[in-house]
Image (cartoon, rainbow, N blue to C red):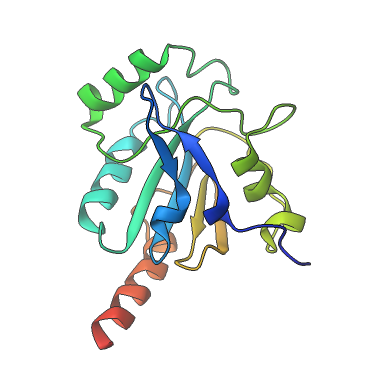
Length: 170
């Protein structure tokens, strides 16, 4: 199946800001796109996401997408989400405005991420908070990871470390 467009074609408003996050700015880097929530059992993964963002910043961009679609675990205002992420986990990676990641009104980025006709790789159902989508430097979906997979796990890092090794050779 042929992809309709590239993930790099998308833009989204940043959390609590007038700034726009342009995914085209991350061409040439991996991206880990994660639907996040402040009141979830998986919320401590913010710590792992921040560590990855700091330690692998030359190779990967982490972007959080707050969503309130799973038991109202992200029901606060954008201001409260921003304060929580900053104060509780020291988050400095980009976080978007609150979005829908499934069902009616799903954000176009998540339409692309979850539909094989669009991403050319696989159909995915976002089943809970902290689902992760790994995108390669050319904008291709590599793989979807469920909530239980930690951002710093070898399941995810293997791709980035292979890429870093290739960069060192070049």
